[in-house]
Amino acid sequence: MDCSFFLKNVVDLFDVTPDQKMQTDLLNHLEGCNACARYYEVVFDTMADLKPRVGIRAGEELKHNILGQVSVTPRIGENARSRVIRMFSHAAWPRIAAVAAMLVICITLIPLMLNPGLVYADVRAANRLIGESLKSLAGLQSVYMLIRVRTTPGDNFESISTEGEFVNNALWKIFSSPARWRMEKPGRIVVMDGRNQYLYRPGEEFAMKAGADAGLVESLKLFLDPGRILETEQKRALQNKAFCHVEQHDSTLVLTVTSKAAGDFTNPYLLNKSIAGSNNRRVYVFDKQSKRLISFRVSVQSGHREIPVIQSAVIRYDQQIPDSIFRISLPPGISFMELDDYYSHGGSDLPVASGEEATRIIFESFGREEWNTVKKFIPELRFQGGRVASEIRQYYGGLRVISIGKSFRSGSYPGVFVPYRIKLKSGEVISHNLAIRNDNPRRLWVVDGGL
Image 1 (cartoon, rainbow, N blue to C red):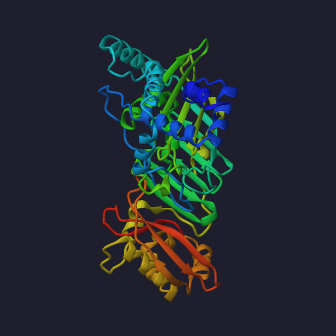
Image 2 (image 1 turned 90 degrees about the horizontal axis):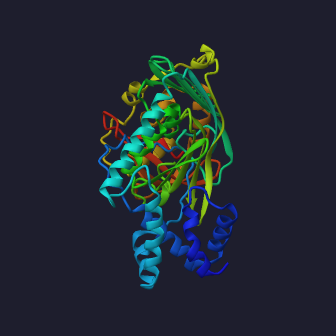
Image 3 (image 1 turned 60 degrees about the vertical axis):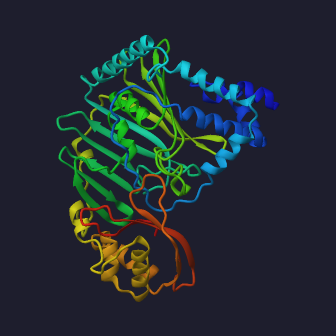
């Protein structure tokens, strides 16, 4: 494939029903051609910057609470992007505009203000589809889903990893009043019993109780209401400058959403670590008659590739679900702590002005084995079993601080990341970033991940 053929057919990479061989050939060409790769990046950003203008109120933003191990991902910054744009000849821009225009013409769910008559007709059509989708919930008793996600076992339901293996996530829901549901993956269980949510991490002996509106399952919560996906995605599209497109086939209705990462990625630390924090494509397939969701998949753009990170394996409706699914039995010695108690035990008695200062106090306390101080910054240690606390003391006790770096922000995470380098008493040297935040009611610094 030569560059002229690629430029002529690059729009196939944005097609909702692509020719698989063509798409593979185009992606292979991208891998070996820097000029076309830069062209593709500009086309992607140009189309993603075309914001629909329909006056619909945007939905609530997803929570970005990414814990554990995350790695830095390279990204072209704004200055670099400007240099790339200047490298194109004037002849290139008509092709860019043509590709963008081809996609705009295809938008039916969220039209641009190109023709007022068409806009109102398409908005009415979109609202009609949403209404039909909501009606499909009227007689729905229950849903069971098996969802395959590239992620780390035990990590947040929000967390994804473009290099990870697929992990099974199971979801059960009964559409009672109030509704009850359960979401489970290896190392993490969340149950909603109709009044409260309960989080249990079996491998860490950690259990938490929170209110019905707590965001313990993050972005996967969307699939708890499969009949509202059309409505939810429409609102998100307006908020995140996304492209929505609906195609009707003989027996199916296909909704495709392409959106850019939400948040500030001047530092790309959290880029592609969650769906909302990634350049991604979400494809939902509904049964045309019943308007019920029958399959879905989510892909993330990483470099010049689209990597599948979420896909449905099983979706079953109206199956009998036993009441025991919506209960969690804890082992002896473990009890649920209240979310409010978690923060009421957090924070040092010392005045701590910054994340860097809090990080230094934490690691110096580890070094001096002052565990009461450590627990104030990592309050979940107060509620975990003795085995976990003992392992943490043994691993981190007596460490030496080598350096504490300048904090930075990434994505939409409400806290900061503080680079640190420590040497354990075993001689092992660890360099990582501590996720630490103080957006709780008492404005106390609490460790959120990175250990």
